[in-house]
Image (cartoon, rainbow, N blue to C red; front, side, top):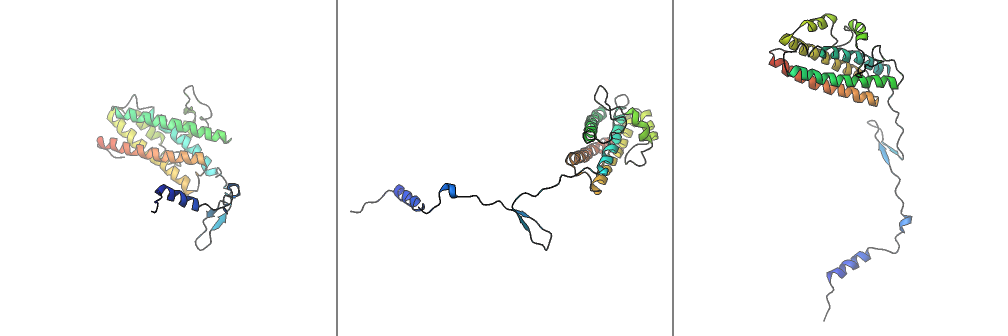
Length: 234
């Protein structure tokens, strides 16, 4: 009578048959040399690398420095505009929105000042010292901003700032939203100009420029909605 072996015996036999006495010991097994493929231009062969290539960190350009210095002045005027809101607005949403802008741009001002200082680069007058609240003294550079509004996108003229300061109630709310929308659009132009010139590649500045671009686009959409409620357009 033939004996039938359990299935478990066959399983063990199969597993053992897969092991060979000729197999090298564990210590003889070496890992293959890692390979990296560096893509080549069309029509050329790719290059096989055995180690990570050295990639130079993007350097700060003159355009980067100019962008940060100008954006400081640009942001400072936005804070001058938001400072008018509490005593002139007739709506509940405009002061809350203005507070959002103030917190965002005041924080970005501090980041830009630190960015310049950390690299021993010139900090525009009025931003090299801060007040007890931690905000830069914007009044000391107002005069310089007044004669730069033609060259800096979105910067309001002295006449426009005076018009805003003289307005009250619904007229003020409309002007504030229209002027701030124009102001934000100027900031987007400045960011795009930076990128078009190949700037903004340095990691910290790249992060800041992208944040300014995305944040102000969101705020512009909100301003357009509030203006529509007032029966106005940007």
